[in-house]
Amino acid sequence: MKKILVAGSLNMDMVLDVDHHPQPGETILGRKLTYSPGGKGANQAFAVGRLGGDVRMIGCVGADSNGQALIDNLRQAGVDTSAVIPVVDEPTGLAVISVDDCGENCIIVISGANFCLTPELIRKQESVITDCDYIMTQLETPVDAVLELARMARQYGKCMILDPAPARADLPDELFSLIDIMKPNETELRILTGMRTDTDEDIRKAAAVLLEKGVSKVVVTLGDRGALLAEQEGVRFFEGQKVVPVDTTAAGDTFTAALVNGLAEGMVMDEAIHFANKVSSIVVTRAGAQASIPDKEEVKEILRRN
Ligand code: RIB
Image (tube, rainbow, N blue to C red; front, side):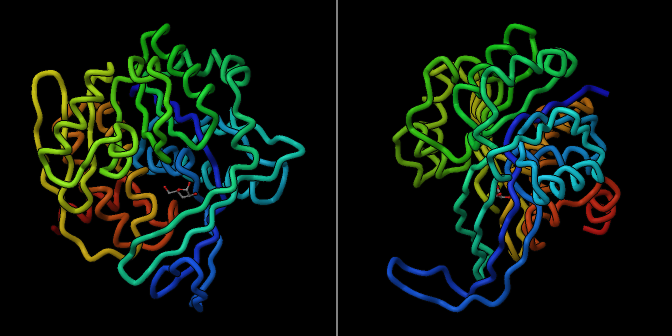
């Protein structure tokens, strides 16, 4: 089986159940507070592990109980965490997440130890990088480390996947040219390109700009409408699954993980996108980040029933 490396963030999620998100200046009463393992990088590694992939993670946590809990949870999913480094002087990353009655979330991340993932630390992990086939990362760690990782991925002929979340408008041009697959959602696509993404035509045009910047394939997730694949050969839409949302947290992370795990298992791109749509639609029907991610057997059973 092909090997997958996830480099990125690990956060403890403080999840607040609310009926609606507060407006600026508004105080609301929440219903419940839950602590659960999250972080875009860790969610992706966890999802690959749950889906049966051969996966390891590079990242940083604090030398504290939250960090240990995050490492333990990844190990339970079969993730090799030997390159997840506990650092002193910084706490484990923390995310404050409110989830409303429609399942929509608002997330604020305090990065903590995630910002200790520097280019130097990436270079020290050269043997881990050369030993894998697919490399996935996100933008919750320093951009210069993401760029270094992408350069090494290109140097060693690895397939580089960027989930550009949280999106930012100031990514270096070089980074785009080093990405084989980029997976923004509509909002992230708008921020990355500065273009409108209100209609399908807008989305096609914005995705085309990423291709012009050098990304090989752009997969835009469109919520329950599915996904769009833009590549030099053209643009295709893939229908999504209609489900009643409970919590959309980690749906995008799981989509990316399922897509890459599918490719690593030998699926062609179309198949992998269909599979990713299905797995992420399951995540949306459950609460929590890693807590909502199904394993391979559950996915098979749910797909069989539906
Ligand atoms: O994508 C969801 C994740 O974003 C959460 O788990 C939170 O930790 C933030 O990183």
